[in-house]
Length: 287
Image (cartoon, rainbow, N blue to C red; front, side):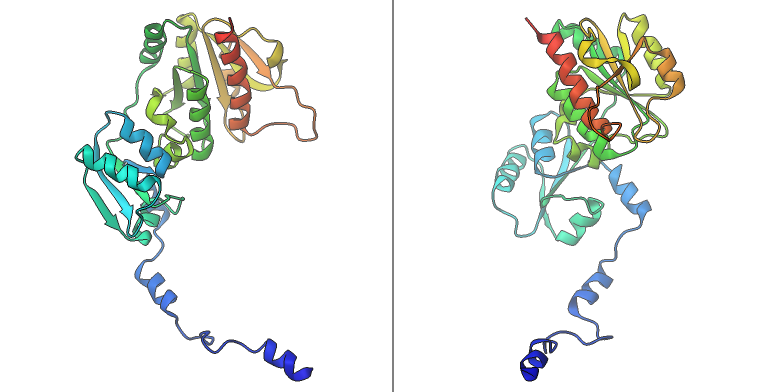
């Protein structure tokens, strides 16, 4: 019995002993993890990460410089994306997984990254013009200091699904439309007008001057399920930690809240966006 135990826990012969470098170690040395600065640089380089995001990109008229595909990846939707890129005359380049990992900032890339021209931001007037062209009451989503790219991406996705005409973000102290945002939006950012403004409070004032009713999503407000959102409407969502700033909240026409029935006192901002935008969209499109 003792011999069996000893044999069972004996280290495998092929395992590297302590202090001995393995082939994996040597590979990691050749491809060191990039610094935060280099990741940030790649994030602003126009990279569009992941199969869904690239598929939506290829549906648009946006200029695409090249498509990077992981070496050996030629199955499922990758085949379709490569065929579409070739049909559009976009260079398709095979590359190693390590390089794709670095370019994606180690976010999941599913074996494909496209490099496109940077997202073109629009103005508030452009967003209102989109609503006018569609013959609809404006529905605008204003993000007051969202810093998490996954939250912003999810909010843009919710906005697109609910028929919003545009999203407004600040120029400073908030995330812009980066590849991670594009990926988190599942490509919805390619179909959504995004305005980048120097001052959110001033943007809210401009919306009000154009007849848009503005509502801050914050605790202590009116019941969102009992609020009349019909007509031109803008929903203001605050940052993950601070919520809607005091100045912006004071500028808004009203404050709305989602009733809470559990022990936790708030939703994640992107979850709150989904709930509120669904409620607003239902009222806007009700017969």
